[in-house]
Length: 249
Image (tube, rainbow, N blue to C red; front, side, top):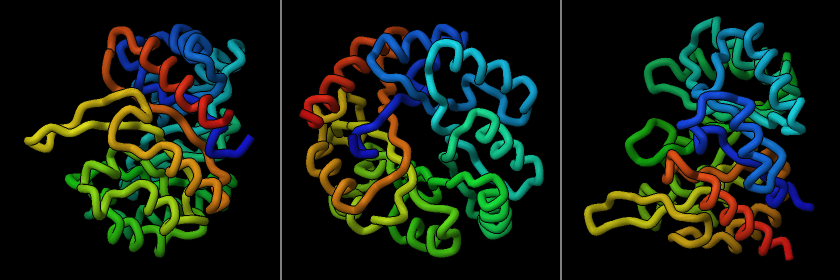
C-alpha cells in the first residue's frame, strides 16, 4: 500500500467527545487504525500526562502517527511537542508558524527535529492564515528543509482560490517536501463560504491528488479530516474511508 493510501483520522473530527478511550473506539468504528491527535484531546506541554493518553490509544490498537496542529512561537517550551510525539512513536508534527516569530521558531524546530528524528509539516490553513499560500510556504520550506516541509490540507488549499490553491498542483510542485496530508473536501457558496463534505464529493479531485502524491514519492503521514456533524461524525467519516478505499481498488 502506498503511503498516500495508508491513512488514519484527525482527532479534531471527534472534538465533541473528550474521552480519549471513546475517541479511540470511534477511530476503529470508521475503519482505520491510526490517528493524529490534536490539542482538543491532549495537553502537549504535559508529557507525563500524555503518557496515559498514549496508553489509552495503544491499548485499543490505535497508532498515534502525528500530533498537531501545533503553533511554534519561538518559546523553549515548544520542545515539549517533540517529546510528546516521540513518546507516542510518532514521526510527524503538523504545525503553524507565526509572522512575528517564524525566524527564531524555525531554527528551534530544525534543531529539535534532528534531535528527535521527527519531521514537521507546515499545515496550509487558507488564505487568511500565515503559511496558507504557496509563495509563503515556499519561503518557509526553503528556510526549514529538510527538517520542515509541508502538510497539505486539501480543503484549505482550495480555499485560497482555484489557480493558486490547486492541491494536485501543490502535490507536484512540493514533491519531496510533503511530510503530511489532511484529506479534506469543501464546496463553496457564492459568498466564498465553505462547507465540509465527504472527501471526494466536493471540489477536490481526489484521484488525481492521490496519483500526484504517489508519482512524487510521498512517504509521509496521512489522515482524513471532516469537521461537520460534530455530534455524530462517524457516518460521514465512514463514508470518507469507503471513498478512499475505492481508490485502492
